[in-house]
Length: 230
Image (cartoon, rainbow, N blue to C red; front, side):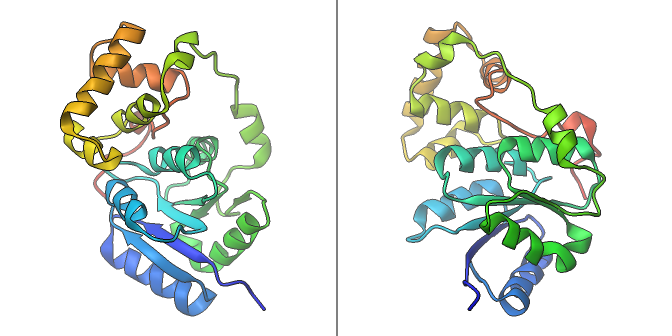
């Protein structure tokens, strides 16, 4: 008997999200317990959920929190959840960025009906899966990965400060970051000030760059891609 899995979906196109949800339920036979319109809403939905999904299927090109930022956040805070990324863009670096953030599989939106089940089965079996329609292979991933030289100051940061920096690397305002972290608006500024004292970096953008350089935060490098409107 095939195990029925608990799945979550994150995609900012309502119709696509609804169709994918129906396909997973009716054609593949798994349960979709969360279907969110963006990364911010997904984190709120996840925090409220009494049970965690085993797999999260996430679009990459989204505003507020892109798929790479969501994936890295999940791998840090919910390591038992496996992530499958999806996109309609055949960009090698985009796939590699997603895998480097911690995704276990990557599928093409245009062929997901053909390869979604393969991706899910591979992830559950501890394997990495890349949709064959993408011109990328695992050898390229190994060549792409490199050792990050981490600033010793990183070891001085608390877990909450690390989380704050990860969320700073998104489009979330401090008010929304406070909601995600379940703290007051003032506490978020306290994290900012504490990081400033430890690193000497005062502005949000420079703290974000510090986080990205040191592997604390990962996000899509938008300068390589087309405008965000689809």
